[in-house]
Length: 251
Ligand SMILES: [Zn+2]
Image (cartoon, rainbow, N blue to C red):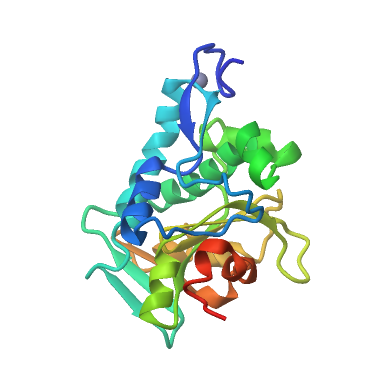
């Protein structure tokens, strides 16, 4: 099958989540990765890739978003991060400047790759359905519209729980906030939770909290966002019951 974005017949190994972040997580966790897979088949892994969705050139286009996200995510837990638990927000500073639009496109690119990949769909069942083409047009900048993406910092209550939060990976799943008719895709990596709006709706209540609004409210050198308690992440009960987590939640 040719590339999903252009006629190029030769495709490459396209990672769903950036491979570098998966490696960071494995290094930090000593292979005790907190994998928040909805379907724990035992084959889900941090470095999931699909050799059939993108040619090298198109993979590189999205790799540009990945690269910026990797630089920002690696600031978590360093002196460049400030957590204000009282206000419920985090702030990251980056002297080279943060491109909030590129972070939003990164969120959408992860979601699009997960949807476009039959391999990933086979694992977690996530699909953008009819909106996959709309996402493709946004991430390859064929239309000026930007995705609505919120980035929250996952917070543990104890140092041990924080380590679990920082090594949590969740491939995109569909969520629908209570009482809302708007669908989102949620994914987690390396201490961040991303919420990507997957419903086409311009008059949304979510946009004030998104990375291109709240995210840059403190200026171009800062990323601001909400805190997300680790214990409130969906699916945590399943993780606690899973084989490799029993040691950490003994009973
Ligand atoms: Zn291509």
